[in-house]
Image (cartoon, rainbow, N blue to C red):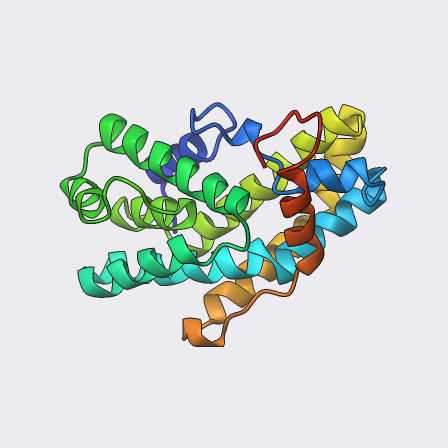
Length: 228
């Protein structure tokens, strides 16, 4: 269960107002829109559902669960191993930047607003940079937020950020954006359940090559609103 104080922290950390720069990333979606692969509410919903099931939702979800369990158990060696894997498990340079920059910003802001010596120690061991799913997972674990609640919130925030990017880039109306997000509720729940069920990261892999291709093409896109 997550009580009022824990829920307050989770909502604060995953709010679009939390200053980690999430608004500046589209996870390759901007190029998908440029190519006409995503052009309306339904194609947007299908694109994000695929990312949740086969791309970052699957991989980062599993990394999040593993980091949460290691942090909750106080297993620093396992946590460091997960953090190292999360830093390397990126398909493109822009995907790596997206996760690394947001993770470092999240950790820096969170340890300042909600001080925790363990987060300071983790950052010191990794030169101040950790992937976003690891940063959010350890904060949640060390503040007593249940894994299912924290991971659901994380995946919802990821999906909502892509919807926000699409609203600006397609452009898509605000109402259609929220209808797309509502249509992703079951996809987020399924991604969360599958991530929690993983017992070994050796069993996890991604299968979203079109997303990676769009990310690589985005690096050379002539005009861009987003950093990825």
